[in-house]
Image (cartoon, rainbow, N blue to C red; front, side, top):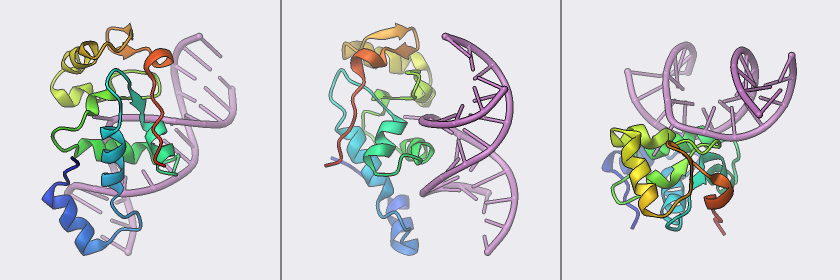
Length: 121
DNA sequence: TTTATGACTTTGC
DNA sequence: AGCAAAGCCATAA
């Protein structure tokens, strides 16, 4: 289940940004990433209909609620950019290894094999 | 309100 | 193929 932090909810309630529940959309897609697969910020952004919000997607993931498989989100090169959020990329790498995600390098997954493109439809 | 930053992407060299 | 610069969006200060 997707959980929005009180701060985010309050922000939406007060300012009503042009992109309603932008975070919720990102979170929903991240939550739909199958086990053993990973996706990229660009793919998520594209699923949102805005290919250029990749950066914002990373921002949203910064506020990732607990229970969201944010470790399955990597950059276009397959690097565990977000791994640092876990304290150490090895933590993220371990999570991905546990899901049988093919690695191209120690901190780089093989997008050719495990890339999952989200479908917002 | 304006400026600066970021878990990015794409284009150009 | 690999490195550098510009662009885009949302957020934080």
